[in-house]
Length: 130
Image (cartoon, rainbow, N blue to C red; front, side, top):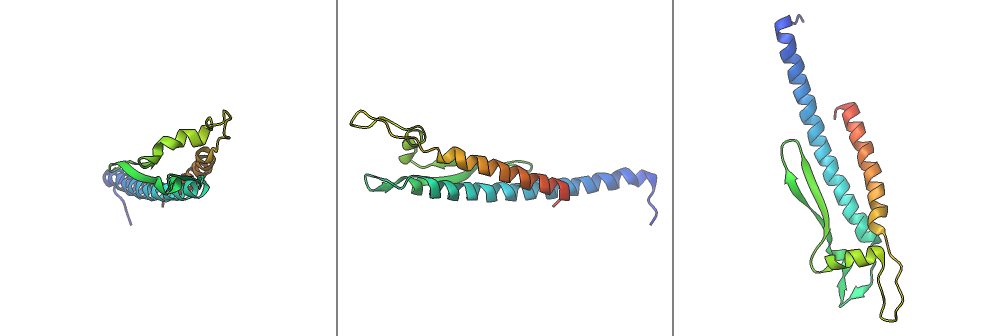
């Protein structure tokens, strides 16, 4: 198959466009997958204590805050009214007796795992093109 020099730039441009769209779509899928895993892991590791019969871990969720052709942003959050406890659980707090509770940094521990997993998967997609 002979390719004319005039068509060469169009062919390369089309192939790069296909590669770019494939990689972008796969990275969006990875974003959703890793966010779902992060929510599940933080729910699993969150404290299971009771506060007025409510469960903190059940309020942990995520949502897509922005999606365009080239980007997708997912946000992890704790639904109302339990979001107020996140800082206290993470850093510890004062007790009625004047003591302090030990913090439970379950968010950062899971985030470190998420970050490594996400970067490895993205590198693989970019390398393989799918």
